[in-house]
Image (tube, rainbow, N blue to C red):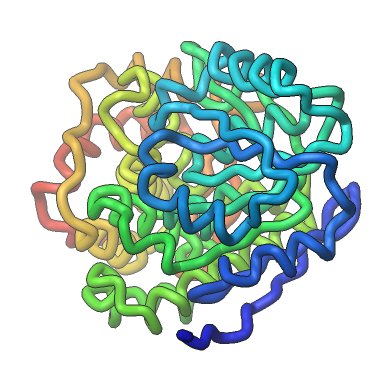
Length: 376
């Protein structure tokens, strides 16, 4: 029998109490023990996508155990499924299956499944237990941690939702083995984000080891997943409801969310939109005198090394500015951007002149084709 390493246990503080992130290759084999430490549930309901369940359904079912395992509810992959209609369908499925207030939802999948399942858990019978088993890199390093749940509206991303922490997150890097290359590269955009906003050493590690990580080297990948989870846990423990510090986690997201919403969530995977957004944010930081040319060039260069991105859409800067105006960070009609004064440091700014933003939006489509070198 293969021996698995002891999981790394990361504690997260939330208003409703503390919860644990368990990370290690093979940690799914310990799922029943981890679940046994939680308050007992009358039944377990898995929410997942058909594609994810085809790949990991048997192994997850064995890991969870068949006792009290009631039903699997499905949500299609992709941001286009992250809707009020998808949320309602899952709630009705729970009701028809007889889920009560002591039932438990286990979200098995990526960011879309986790966000919608979390909103269902927060809302059904005014709140039932939630466990995340993230199966994508984005989910393992970011979206499954911190309690943000929600769905999109045609007007913008994540405009309806709730803060609702899970009881447990089980992050097993072995579940990433079947992740398509495009999704894996997109997830690495969020990993780069953590280096930019909070950890200079992580950013340097990515610069030096990106090719290993792209090949899914177990040691390198395990290191970055654990480090990102530690950063996310620290930030959300200090600012659960995004009243201040947590905004730094949105580096690149003001641009990225606008790209997603204006292309009806069909052109980009989330990480790809964030990749574009981080390059645009680096350029905006440079144009506004906050980010040095050297730092901006390092950010853009590292993002570009992830590989091909779907092209920037043929949209006017005015349309993009309107979409960014619906961003959750906007206050009093003023856009707020997370920018990086240095590698490993970031904060929010709300005094950026709109002509500078428009200039960036004009130039941004060429960032993947022209030199990333910037000049004073």
